[in-house]
Length: 223
Image (tube, rainbow, N blue to C red; front, side):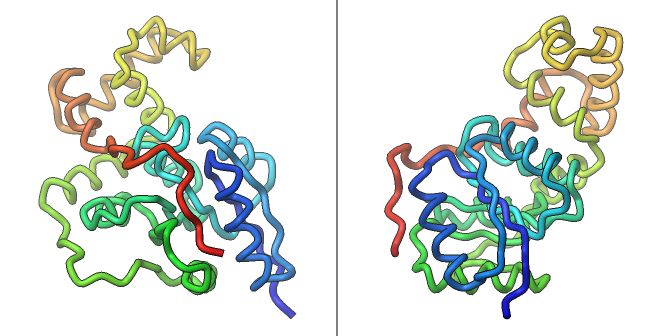
């Protein structure tokens, strides 16, 4: 009998969510699933559904802002393993995702048998990466940034994201339902933790988390 795992599939393409869910359920009959189409929905699902055993997270769905969404979720839910799912197989992106806290990386183009194997490995507490010979080493810059980002609280990551979007303190305060003084305090802490002197320098660092979307059409998912 398979174990009753709880798995969250977060992707803005319903067909992709359905295909991945079907593939995993065929292998793990007792698993339960929740689905999300945005970062906001993923957060709501994780907050309301209790402890999940695995989150499969699309890099390019709404709210993610590249790998910023991964950093936020790692800070907010440190006990839940997260595997990125993406149409991209760029080796540097895979390395960055792992540096910023992903437990695995699953290409959407992978055969379903490989996706099942990856999920099994992740549920067993192992890491899972696509087989490739040219996965680059972590750069000093990425290692340093990953360390700095790990010191930010979830709320500080939210504020950093909004600063990167060009929002003023007043707008951020309204969106997060906090005072402008609290926003200023968060910005000061962000600058200190990132080791920069201005919002502009913080935005430059945050932009390193931006990931170009290779295509917005529904990717092929092997069945």
